[in-house]
Length: 207
View 1 (cartoon, rainbow, N blue to C red):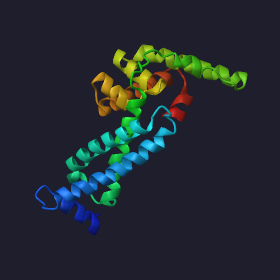
View 2: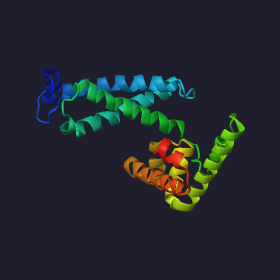
View 3: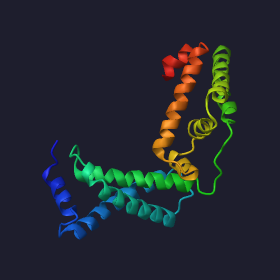
View 4: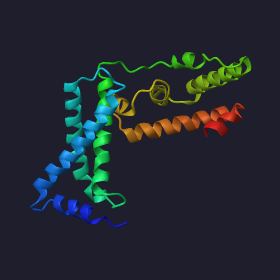
């Protein structure tokens, strides 16, 4: 799909050799800052520790990073949406990353799988709770049996304890892509192990 006229103008003005590039960059930054401020305000509802100064700082940092990302990926824009819509998403994404990281600032990453205990506590019928307990026990055993040490750490952090992948990537010196791949491989191993143990419903419901 070819970009619309306005989007083509953005691309033309943002070209490295365009005389209008400085003004276009300023306009793009203003767009990204609006996106970042919107997302920071939206997420602050569930992060009450964020104050006005913190929110402004996070939004500015997010807009700075989003601007660099957009300018480095101009060749990736294919015109499937308006340029401003495409660019706006960079501001939203960077703001979400910044808020998640700030929420975990100063907090230790959980490395144990105590979450199993919480998951096994339910209010269902006795038969349902028994089946649930058996499945959770099988998953916990499979985590120790078939996953490598690193896969266990990633699975426990991301899948059980809800650590944001951006935070884990930064703390572990890894990348989002590498962690997603490791989590995917860990889940595949667990599915195969549980199916081998006769938990066919795991394959049907989770596969």
